[in-house]
Image (cartoon, rainbow, N blue to C red; front, side, top):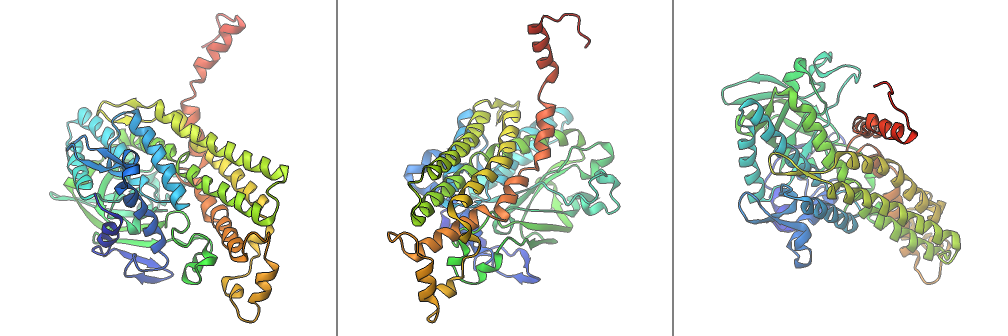
Length: 481
């Protein structure tokens, strides 16, 4: 397994094409826009080296018997699914941000079971290829970005109906040694500081879309791959003073990017689906369920930080003994633990697939993510309520330290005498970072928008069976089917 330092050093050996603000970023490790996201991902490596977290952060490879980072593991039982949840909460607590690595983990696990089932149905060798690739990921402790979301173009049209075929990643050429693909993947979390990225289809497809039914893996610096780093709220503060960033070390969310594939070659041994449209629904839904499981874990870890920040700012403001403040803190804890319950539940109710790998309960995973789209907003609202409006109007760090006016800023932004003005400043900026802008949008749309979960919940609700339960209790017989 890699240490955090070795992970950072390994990024220096890659040469991805990354742009931000119209300029090329030559080194993601050193650039102030990307370094916080490197730090957050590095925590997944660091905690795995600490004895006290070995049980959560590492696992035994079912392929080799070696001890591996859990972010490269294929879930072998429900205990693995539960430990994943606890691991993600721990990392959310330690970073207060997105540590990015779970998307690739979910892509590997979804592919593992679906490629096995494809091979059983069609006599292909996708699973064999994936196992070989998985061994490389485990042996080298690679960070993989999971790449599912396509730009989609006109959402009323299927992939093959788009005026521009590149709105979904597709095959443009099949060769004896591999395929050539074109298109893009949007909102790619952590991709600029990953080693590899794993592309999956983003929607269920029909036969007409078979050129879009693709799954494959590539290095992030493969020829023809271009990353355009996305903007975040207050992101230019990363170029200024650390106090004003709120979470200067780990940043906000996961450093998303638009990843362009401009006629990129993929060798066959890295292709895990090519035209098998019949399995796109299974692959999409399995990945989505794994990823929605995460949100009652990583977001709850961040919520733990938000609750702590709310409690701290209440003391700074001198209102911590007020009954309504205590009630709001209790409500924040209640909401966050409710989300955690959902992630634990869908893990406990997981099931074994024909491949031997375990999947979560899809209904409960979708319910978990649906709750995140609401309850995280309420947790953040309560935190802002407790903190006060000054979190949105606070002067800058330069004003605080200015020789002419700094003394006034120090004086008039002081709260309780038990805390310094700088303490109050820092906590206010952290709350601004955690509860406003990009972080909340990610709670809404990460792992799929709310409607995506509602579609899955309706599909799995088994309303016909529930209707029969009601008819039986009501004493109704001979009801129409």
